[in-house]
Length: 256
Length: 73
Image (cartoon, rainbow over all chains, first blue to last red; front, side):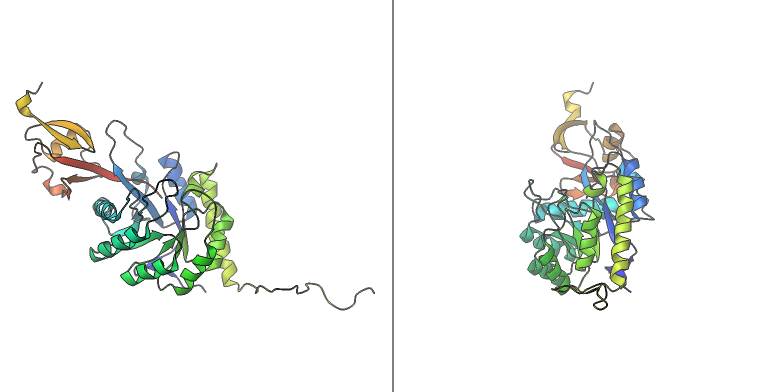
């Protein structure tokens, strides 16, 4: 039996975390969320637009059922991340945070220096910090030592759907981790999720993969199945990988 | 029409805006049909407690940010 997923002392029943951005409507997002079986749901913090009243995504997320994980997307350095974090805490009413510091808009890769700086400040301020990072095992260790509740290494750039391009590094992170490892960013297909779990990840976070699918609700459902299949397969004790062949049919009684 | 004596210039969500003298945060939210909506108000870099919205009067040159949670990854 895989041990249950516990983050910051809280048991999390679904290993699929879902982002709520880029959906064509709040209604579709809500149905996809339901189909995904996710418990942890990310959201962002932005200015209210006065002339353009938008579909209120948050109103469609029942906070008794789902655990909000606000992100600091938009932050280009630690100072901006800390400011967004505090606003997000005031808005969500609680202290869980996805720390995301991405100064460069083309690849949206997380800044390791600013992320560590912000994490240390935010942990002192009482936040439960889940940092989004490149798959850097040394950085992951430093963030855990600083007190982060999990680490979230990327598979490939946000929204790229390229899958896991950082497998070896993620494997090292998982081997050395003392907190849950959530593969976050770049996942696009059910097979990508399976690969994450087969590497040993504790959870995965997807957003574009669901929101940008032609049928987001069906895709969310298939991701739920992918997670279940991965976990069931791992619990079944998979065969080991060999270098050479190992015949599947008998080696005796040949017609010769 | 308010006279020039009665108007204050503030910065609201990154843009210049005008409000009446003595305008409270509650008044401003009402003006934009935002009262009662889930949002956070930051005045001059400080997050305002909801209990103070009726009491805090805005001043000339104030910088306000009105933010909320939205969909995101």
